[in-house]
Length: 305
Image (cartoon, rainbow, N blue to C red):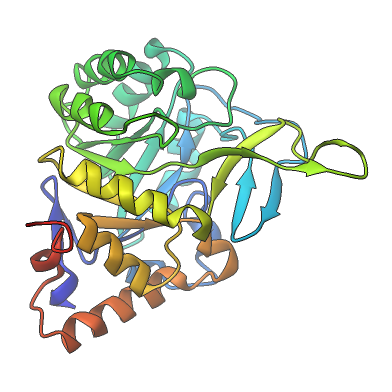
């Protein structure tokens, strides 16, 4: 599928379809349900310095056209990930992106340093925007200055891998945050993470989620995500990876036309484990029908004047 081949930050991808962090486990969980090697890459669930057990139950609740999650970034920790999860991931013919986070700048730096020297990790994705933890991510995405501090600190120890920074939509204006990423050495940005929301059980008269609030994802947030991808694309020169409510090739095409150089599919994986492959096939057929040699020809076409 030459029409879908691309290069992001010096890394060759067979196609621009990536399984989003937090919805594809460590990648291996989906191996028996779909052909992972048909998609461009996997962004594994967020990895921290130490093992994390996440938020109290319940952690998930369905909403109209979406899903609220308050998992709390549960993960095995970076050392156990490298020892127990990565060896099997290394065998897959797809790009491996490791999403990572910390509760302090020092933790971000330590995880980044470890991952930067780890073989077969192709790219790093810094999560500064997850809204469902009580310390760490949300504070670092609250101001451009905080973004500058954590990125500049991590870039001092990252020399082997491209760095993607995942942006929060829970801000008044996403553009200064994207510019802060670019100005402080980010190689790409991904947009957007989940929107903060909540649900209430009217019988118990209490919040449904154990954490009270959670991150809203799925089709409900797609129009917001598209608008923000457009704004970021018009603000920075580094690649933009679009995320938010993508469930088929048409959705992916919209994000590309809005300025995305690649897309990540998240919540839709819970509905259809084969959605990434189907989106890849559908996007290729669309490009063939439109007689477009490579999708890069239409990146940002809908918003470029």
